[in-house]
Image (cartoon, rainbow, N blue to C red; front, side, top):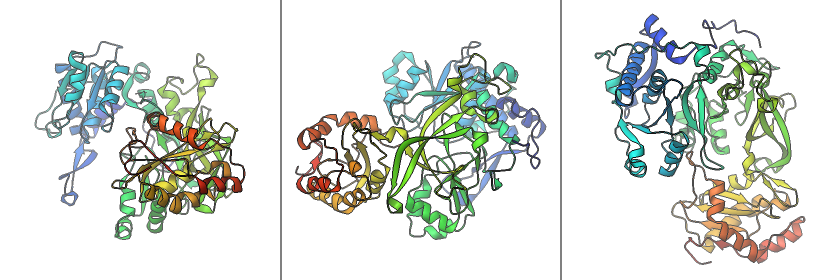
Length: 550
């Protein structure tokens, strides 16, 4: 990787500590804007107010003194956990820096988590202190934990940002070498395939993002510009899908030149509509790895991500499975699993490896670390761009390896064509396809709000969605008419991200699923004629908690 000549690289880049940098900027350039916040959260036309680094540093110091007063300092090297449940404002950022200064680590448990998940994460991180913002109700958590937990409400945001009450300095005096592997915060996995697990992020991981400044501004065989890295305040612009389905979508979208988003995948409808009126690109990231070096996609690549393969340390491993692209006439596409590996080119930017302490301060693998730990499977499945010239570094997200179904016959099926088609129906909220270890798949389908689980609804789903999708799938992957389980709206257990939890759905409906296989069989369908005879003669099963006739 060549050093960027167009951007001035900060002194000591890649070996800086966030609390120290904030205090330095507050001292040397105090009026530099850190963030711009709406004057009125409910009326954005009222404008924005800049928050300076002087105000930021003062607010962090206020909060650090508050923590010492109500919790105390954490014993050296202990990094006691403080959990925080707040409203969506910048106090998350303030608290993250304040607890570093007091020697603690902060657990940010998603606002969407259930009480049970909050409690489990607190148990896993040995948390004894629960901090909240006003308006966040935690009586159920406190009632469950009892005397094991101390509840503290932190100051209001306006009070923290009020410069008329300056706080005394609260310095952070560690060097990078001393603090590199100290924790900054604890996030957690989504829990899609099990209970959410804590993910501890340290200073070394953040320093790997700092090193992105060393990357050249262009990369790739065609000299593409580098995509925006680590400069956007949030990921997951969920409103894009809502905008796309508004009658005045074109008017809204045309005001924008480009959109760079992450956190979710737009539907084919949403992607096409946005791409007609502005450039849009989906940036890949995960909690475990954070963002990785990426490139700007071309305007017609709106369904794809463009990667800096070398700096990101990406290799794509063929799974041997194929994806039937129902959106493109049933075209068969090979499925590859993304793997990140530590190489001399990728080590400086390998957030995931620095986070786990596998690399030295100079981004070299530690002698004590097994080579097997220097690569990690992400669990995401991708298909390459059909243009061979782009296929090395332009890829389209296809789903999760957790979703890949391996039948007892050895055949593999990725169910995304079926689930996407069902989710596109106004009758359906979401669908999950089961069948691992069996000979044929089964669809568990959650109805949309206000839609019953009647035989008539099931027949309509079959006629308008499933029968058509089946014709584009391998015969062994089609859903037989008998192997549909309809469940009411809201019945699916969900993760913190709002998606259905496959494992919990399978567990919840284990008896109903087993009953369907017992009643209608578990047959390998290698020929369309045999498959067709089944779908004509059988009936559709309804969940025991559904309404309507069976």
